[in-house]
Image (tube, rainbow, N blue to C red; front, side, top):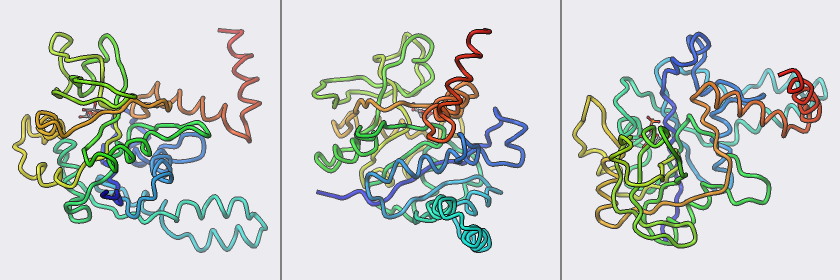
Length: 291
Ligand code: G1P
């Protein structure tokens, strides 16, 4: 059984949909409640004991490194003011072994993953796309843990999938399913963002994957299409050989790369918050009466 010890988070998008905030603030630092989206993603890995996280950033994203780095003055201040709880919250950000690589030019998802090659080599890795938050309720097995368990049991790459309908089918990588057992599917084909008539099924790839050790080598051999390197091309090759699985999951997914998805995440995390959950609920109820 091969253990998964590495994780790659491509987070180099410019976030132009969120201008003007993304002019000076890198998109992964946009906050849901009081935490940047990138930290929610590193926290998803807490359940699987990853040893090294590689974050692929765009040039000028130093503030992300700062977020995961030391903060001596702030810590001294919090301790001397007796703010131990806030001190602990700050220390949490430093518990990850994070490496940063800069993607100089945007050349597709596969291009972003290849930036992490020097750290990943030919080891298996978890891939978490920075625009999605996957939230597991307490007691629920997190999506990433489920994927890692499937990989460690089968040795095959595995992707998370959800069902989508209507025009949404064309927004995602699309999966042709061969067989399904207990929510784990064998895959016949993958197509990237098909038109409705080209779609193989209603199953979409979402941004959580565990990829086997051979994938980095396969990515290196890709030829660009439309100036981009597509991870989907490698996934399709794996699926044709019977080496790719998909898994459904029951966590809640937020598309925080989209304005409405981002607002939904903020509202729902505020409702879950021990600090402001109750007052948020009362506020929303009152507001809803006026809508
Ligand atoms: C990428 C992948 C696509 C996948 C999607 C999930 O697309 O290429 O296969 O369905 O992430 O969010 P992007 O959203 O980066 O265009």
